[in-house]
Amino acid sequence: MKIGILIASENFEVFSGGQRIAEAAVALGHTAVKLFERKISFEETTDAGIMVKYDGKPLPEVDVIIVRPNFVEEPTLHQYIYDLLVRAGYKVVNGSMGITRTKNKLLQRSDLRGANIPMPKWAAAYDAVGCLTAVKSLGYPVMLKMAFGTKGKGVFFVDKRETLIPIIDYLSVRDGNPVIIEEFIEEAKHAHVRIFVIGGEIAAAMNVVAPEGDVRSNSGGTYEKIDLTDEEQSIALLAAKTMNLDIAGVDMLRSSRGPLVMEVNANPGFTELEKTTGVDVAAKIVQFSLKKA
Ligand SMILES: Nc1ncnc2c1ncn2[C@@H]1O[C@H](COP(=O)(O)OP(=O)(O)O)[C@@H](O)[C@H]1O
Ligand SMILES: [Mg+2]
Image (cartoon, rainbow, N blue to C red; front, side, top):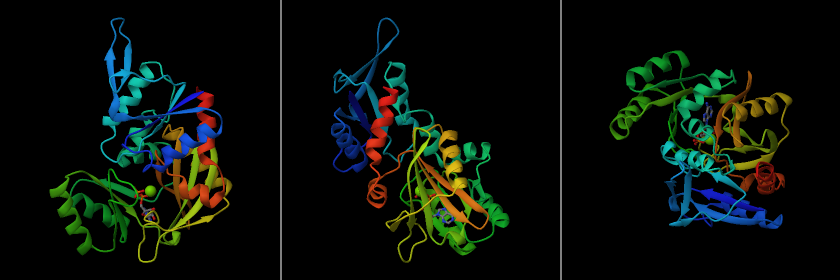
């Protein structure tokens, strides 16, 4: 089979996830076709269909396209590509509207809440008044999160009003977007559980611990093998299904009131996960995509 791997960034060597999937496809006896979003263009055909071009020529033949949405900005500017590929008749893995709803952390909250998935207590607000009102019910410390971001960039630990106000002031001038304010889960001990879900099944999981001097476990910490509880497994599967993702990284905090979903990731990396667990995650992604082809 010919397996397309579509990434937003310009470089497969830099983006290890895309590169690993390409290697796994070849190892399993298939052909990997590396695709970059920026080279794709669309044209309407006279019979009201959609023709896809790549670098000005017809898109190379592919049986399925695996999307790796490796971008952090406004997702709808990428989502239209996945939508139009589907409309043009391509089989697309991990390209549903769930990408946009997951990448926008505020929309993600709305969906997870709608499915009654346990989460840390949270609030969303635009300005200092809204944030201070939220903190009154949440209590310090809180985590302050931007609508878009990854790898801990745009996530702040806020332990008092004096820290919160200058951050909000700065953000209102710099980006003027709403933020999420969330109860800080102390008992999680600066660690989170990463559960990698592919096609409604758990592929692998690990514990991620923050480096010394940081509460953010995704800023380059250490990784450990773990066993998941039944509850963690069922919540992870429900979270991935709720966000309508073929490939999802569900992050959980182990709290005193049970597992809480901290975040669902639509473009979860798996380099450390493969090293820690020995699971060939890339091969599992390829095998799943073949079912869709
Ligand atoms: N409510 C919380 N309680 C404790 N730690 C948190 C909480 N929310 C986030 N963190 C820490 O901050 C890190 C980054 O937050 P996250 O929501 O995953 O954003 P992103 O992945 O976009 O950087 C997490 O890996 C976790 O270690
Ligand atoms: Mg995260």
